[in-house]
Length: 88
Length: 491
Image (tube, rainbow over all chains, first blue to last red; front, side, top):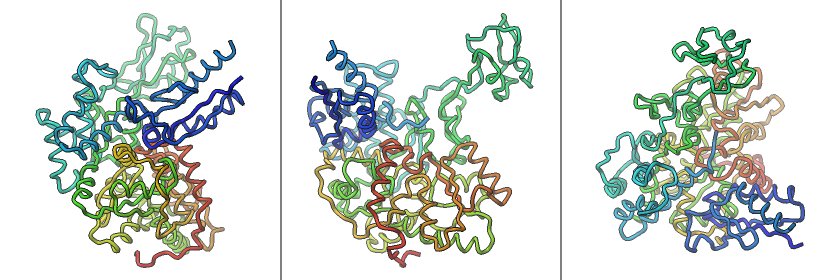
């Protein structure tokens, strides 16, 4: 089964608007999901320069899905959904 | 509870960014006036308040605070564009560093002990029995508290077998360690500035984001625009608050328009060495204990509420004061801006002869966003003076006291103890030490107003845990305090 890829945007905008706190995920995810999910912090993903700008930052990508105004809880929920789908 | 990552904080940052964008635009005043309309355009969702008009009114108030004015004295008929203009014309920032947004304040129900519906009207009635003040009676088979008799002792809460009795809190009142914020006659929070120590705990505690710092951003940007030299002095707690390393951060700050950047950790090295000497002298004179003196919130606590502890407080100046002396001597015409994790330093800056302004981490972050600066893409630029690992550790609890210990020649005789965050209990503790003239817990007492140290300040961007880790990593790459010569010109 393919690993779920989680990319946390650590560009300046996302970091200032809250992704600083999402670095917590880099510790939580491997502990909780072992090798099912891969998580990494990334330089600016370029999402803030598109239509929704900084008011929707911080952004996280879970595979191809963009999570806006991301929080630790929100991202974990999306991951859980994907794992359930994969297991079907 | 402290929360520097809430929706309310997010909103404050958005407005800061918009004000900066307006400042750099071709029509600063008009674009400032339009901020509430841009953020809540016609027909948009109303996420928080009763209607779009109230949303906009509160956004306007937030913008006024971020332009540096008090909402308490604000005249509703004055347009935001007029405030923008006044901010630009102002010679000096206003005095009190905080302001309460009347319209944003929920007017929480008064703090009290309350019996909820969970009360089973039991036969034992432990609540009634335990109450020393006769405040509890039984009405329709259930306990009721008479507010005029209740002394908030919470005994009834503790004995109720159903956990049916709760304390209703007002978050700002609860967070304030000195009772300086309370509901006024209209039910809205009001700050008593004679008692306020500017610790910023109410700012972090209010879930409605109704307490604001009054920003000096426009004042600072004005000097830059006029082509004056503006120099940033970055607090040690800045490490971990932004992406990239501190050397990239230095060039990123210069890209905004700052002429140069100094580490306040350099000043912390002076503080450390001087405080270590002072400690030895005091112990030789058989004094029982000494407390550190670099926390601005603590210094105001001493001034306003805890005069008795003064004889035990170190006379050494703060890291900011020393770096201010050093930099002003080199650049007498420059404007110095302290880049700060908290609001308390605003008061220290106002009294400091060398440092001119304060910009907090949120405001610096907003500047990076508005100026579209990618810190991770910035080049690394070293400092002329590389600070010690001890100086760079000042922003984390125990950092100051252990620095002083490390710099002392005779460090076996030092016994550290820390006040990790001021609250009603730790203030009581300090009062006791002052009254008794001794502290059994240790002879070198570090006092930090915020839990976790400066990394727990109200204007920080990161969590205490992640930021502390980043600082500790940075420390391992830095030199020891005993291996550097300190500038002796700073006295």
